[in-house]
Length: 297
Image (cartoon, rainbow, N blue to C red):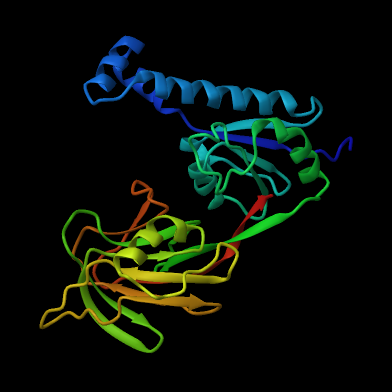
């Protein structure tokens, strides 16, 4: 495989323990802070230790002749991925974070703490990384292609997400907009709306689905379909609550036109800091993205 080895990109983020030490200065001060809130520092320190051990295991297993690099989650928007990169991420959240910056690269999800974390996007223990890297390099093994969602503003700005897209107001104010889908059109005032993929259907989307007592069939992660849900639509003389959920298949799209003077936002995967402004008169089209997360199983 000389000359043909892929670059391994290890994607990490600071653990809660590291962030606590950075904020409070010392372990003792961090311990005191957590105990005032009924928590123990032992738990967050254990997670930190297991995460570091998993990263070290992965790093040691990468063949010495393979190129490698490390990127923190905060730098993903400035990092340039190569077409043949193999990406290794260490939590469900990190896999979702990195997905929107990829264009077909294979992702290996490593679960550093299986006893505490669900293996939805991180099905592998760190000890398996050697054979997983070999499979990825040889383009062997099962690749699970998960559907993603895009939001395209009428000015060309685009947002991509693995779990869901949220459209609404940045504060707790009502979001006001016009919703168009499948030949229907309704002016609404609500707590915003989400458009979820099959991956997101196990999280926020599932929560709203349950609150709605909905009978809508939720999409599967690899199914080319999305579902949308309006949160707390308010019926009034000028707003309706009849168009509150539906499925988007194939080339379907949901159109939303803002009627918010300020504070309108669109963000993906719960990352509010990385949002698009959504001011009065702007229209966003939400639909299935051409990109997919390619997860090595």
